[in-house]
Structure formats: structure tokens, C-alpha cells
Amino acid sequence: MSPTMEIQYPTHAASSFIKKQMTKQQFTQSVHAGSNLANHYGALSTPIYSSSTYAFPNAEQGAAIHEGEMEGYFYGRIGNPTQETLESALAQLENGEAAMAFSSGMAAISNALMTILDSGDHIIVPTSLYASTTGLLKFLESKMGVEYTSVDATVSDNYLSALKPNTKAIYIESPANPTLQLTDIKSVVEIAKESNLITMADNTFASPINQNPIDLGVDIVLHSLTKYIGGHGDLLAGAVIGSKEFVERCRWHTNKLLGGVIAPQVAWIAHRGIKTLAIRITAHNSNALKCAQFLESHPKVKRVHYPGLTSHPQYELAKTQMRGFGGMIAFEVDGLNEGQKLIDSLNLCTLAVSLGDVSTLIQHSASMTHASVPKEQREKAGITDGLLRLSVGIEYAEDIITDLEQGLSQLN
Ligand SMILES: *Cc1c(COP(=O)(O)O)cnc(C)c1O
Image (cartoon, rainbow, N blue to C red; front, side, top):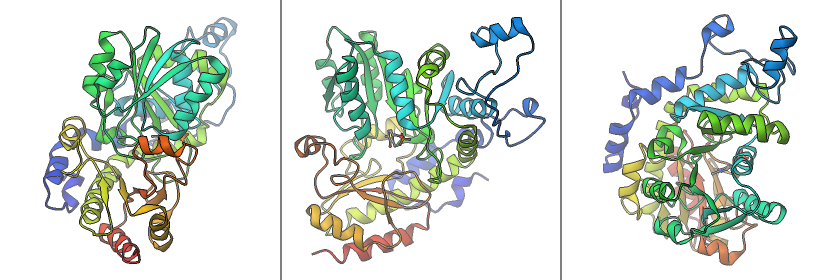
């Protein structure tokens, strides 16, 4: 029996949509992707290879392996078999040719950007973007002379208007952090293809279970494995997924020099997380939809941003490019004080940044994750003072709702 059938969905158009879209492939692939029994003495869980270095068979082959001309391991900064298992699983889940895992999501994003962009190149990014990615672009601008333009990514043509002769790449984050705004991935890819630009998409919020940007034409997918893929809030890691040629450039060119490699112990935990990814995401999707519906019906909540609600301005788009709507919700209460009052009165929902954890986490974007973004720019990106970001966990949905209800009842 499919695991989806054991989860009670609310009666809502979106829930039957999720049920229809989740295929056998996501569930079976999560459990088995990356495993290679023959290479590891039949071990179902690929062992942790904690060796820094690997012996060469002889001088000639040693020279070939060292230069990447022959397959084989030689030094942990390039890769190791535990990492390879994780990378192979990630490539399969995202329908990419190859993947590389990194020490954090930011290590993956900085590596991909530095592999693509030379000094003087221009990139177009969404205004509503993971705050450290915006920080990284500023850093690359001042240190390396890379140019970037931020656009409202809910309107695809804004990417077109921002094109410059030196534009090299287009960056997508959909759903975006923390506003849950969507980008029409297919139409942005079309714009990019017409000008021979590279497209990259941060797919952390959706996870590969809910959305596969490569299937929509995107060249490079980025992930913070720290979130849904690890899933248990016990690791930091990231990944780049794309063509074999691009991934090998990230590995042999950029990361050989930058060194932000994933530790084999962490690669092992991340791969273990993937085995339960589809079933966890199904629970996140289902719980988040119930919480979003509850919040939308509550008088103290001014607005709820969740792509699975029919009130989301891009609900129809969400249905065309996502299989499920994810576990992330943003909602607005009446200003900063009310927001802080609410998060201080919750018991089950933990006040913490990060997301994608099995536990429900809540945070206040304006004073936490996006505090580094100036107020005017924050508001332009839709981050009002009363905006709270909820990462719905896999607890029993009614328990999460009960906690939100008692917190909201304490507001004026
Ligand atoms: C967390 C996150 C990152 C950065 O990942 P780290 O693992 O924290 O370095 C990038 N993009 C998004 C959307 C994220 O949520």
C-alpha cells in the first residue's frame, strides 16, 4: 500500500491534488537512491569512509587519478565513497546528470556562483531571496566585481527587462524565503534560453519530492541539505546538481581551491535522511495545509502565504510546477509587538531559525533571518514587521494547531 494512503488529508481541492501528483517514484527512489551494494560488500547503509587519503595502485594510475583522468579516490577534498553515495542519490532525486555535496548550503551556492561568474559578469536574482544569498552577491560585487540586479520574480518579464549585455545567469528561488512567492520557472527558463543564459534554482523550500526544476528546464539546482533533505536538524550541508560537465568543474576547479567539502560522517547522516524524505515531505505537506487553513480562518491573522491555499495569488501556477506545496508557511499578525508576543507564548512550536526539521519551528523574519536587510528593502520583498515564518513539522497536526490557537488567543 502506498504510504500516502495512510495519511488523513483534509477535504480541500489542494489535498486531492497532492495525492494525485505524488508518484510511486518519489517514495521508492527516496529509499533506494544512491545505494550501491556491489561496491560496499553488500552493505545496505554505505559505510562512513573516514579516510583522508587513498593509496594509488601504481605511479602511472596515481598520476591519472590525481588529474581526474581516471576514476578513483585519492584525497578527501575531491570526494569519497560515502559522499559519492549521497551525490548519486541527490542526482537521481532531482533528475540531474550529476551532483556534488558541500559543507553547507552557502558553500554550495557560493561554489556554483563562483564557478559561473567572472569579474564583470551580471546575474539577475529575485528580490525575495535567502538573506545570505543576497549577502553573498554583495560580497561578490565588492570583492570580485560581479554585478547583480534584484527583480520581483513573481513577474517573469522582470527578468527580461533586467537583461544586460554582460548578463550570464538567472537565479530563481521558488517558493522564495520567507514570502512563499513563486516564480514561473518554465517561462523564466524560456527567457534565459533565448539569450543563452545559465539558469540556477534554489530548490530548498520545495525539496526534490515536491518540485524538480531540471524537469522544467533549469540547468543547475541548489540545495541546503540542512533543511528537508537532512530533515532532523542535526547537520549542515549543501548540494549542487546539474550536468556532469558543470558539477565536475565545481569539484575539480572551484572546490579543489575553496575546500568547502562535506565531511563523510555528515554525508552519511544526510543520505540516511533521504531514505525517509518522501514520507516526511508527505507529512509536512499535509500538516502545513491544515495549519494554513486554520491560520487563514483566524481573526487575529491578517494574511497567510501558502502556495496550497486557493487565496495564494499563484495557486494555479503552484499546481502546474509543484507536486505538493511544502511545509513552509508565512503569516502576518498586527505588527512587531504582536508577532513577538505570539512567538513567546507558543509551547510546542519552537522559536528557532532554520526549517525543514521534523519539529515545528517558528521565527520572526524582520528581527531574525532578514534583520540584515534594510527595512525599506525588506518591505519591498514583502517582509512586513508582523510576518512570521512557520516551518511545519511532522507532529500530529491538531497538536500544532492547538498551540497556534492558544498563542493567537493571547493577542489583542
Ligand atoms: C538555509 C538555506 C540556505 C543556506 O543553507 P545553509 O545550509 O544554512 O548554508 C540557502 N537557501 C535557502 C532557501 C535556505 O533555506
